[in-house]
Length: 311
Ligand SMILES: NC(=O)c1ccc[n+]([C@@H]2O[C@H](COP(=O)([O-])OP(=O)(O)OC[C@H]3O[C@@H](n4cnc5c(N)ncnc54)[C@H](O)[C@@H]3O)[C@@H](O)[C@H]2O)c1
Image (tube, rainbow, N blue to C red):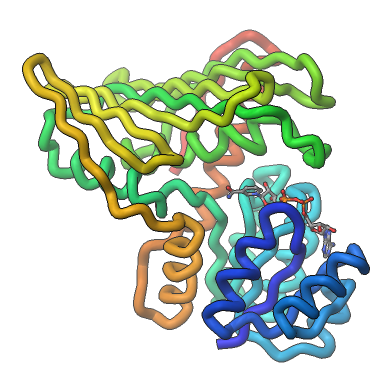
């Protein structure tokens, strides 16, 4: 298996570390000359400064694309057309129509296209998904997400909905195992060029609800969620990966064996290429997340609910 990585910035350093430790990283492509040199030396791999050059000279099976959102469509199109399997970081594309075009190209070229909705691979979410599926505490009725942090100064191309809330949109769809039919959102802007705080309400079948609150204002990193079931409330923390289950009489703490979600996610993608794993985020699910993010932005601008019919 030969893997290349395009973009080694704040987040991409982690993919490269894992891929290199598995001995499958064969080249990097980084447009920043200094960074490219630093990481090609660190991981003892070749460095290219453009995707065209990479495709022309390097033989490989799959690529990780960890560049800013606005660049995803162009880079991923080229890779898929060259029949490479692609893992692209979230959100898959800036516009949902671009995502739909990528799906067509991936199907035509018979390659896997997946997107980095990492929380599905978080042991805490995996446990909650299992509990909810088994209906151990009755029906899942509501989900509440809180994701807060100081603003990431380097993100210029998108606001908090596309950058941050998308994680919780995907996790809500995953835990409910369906797509929302209505989206209502409020969003505002204090310091960023785009929106930097938001609260999004997603409506699912039978009036089930997900409420997603994200901000880049408060000076503390906080990533928590609650799953409200008919017989208990399940509370969890994406960072500590701990789970607390409470009902009227009892409170139970579940300690998960802490594992790096990115490692799980990368192993699943590699497993899918090898035909051993089916647990990947599908390209269709990823485009749906973009459509929901677009609807949230539109809803917050117009002050109205947006109804969607997602497959
Ligand atoms: N899953 C997660 O938890 C998570 C966390 C952070 C970021 N991300 C996603 O990862 C992606 C990158 O974010 P980041 O924070 O690492 O950004 P970043 O700006 O720190 O890094 C991006 C890197 O890509 C390089 N680059 C840009 N265009 C390029 C091109 N055409 N060819 C080669 N290299 C190019 C830049 O020089 C830079 O080094 C975004 O899609 C972001 O949403 C995901």
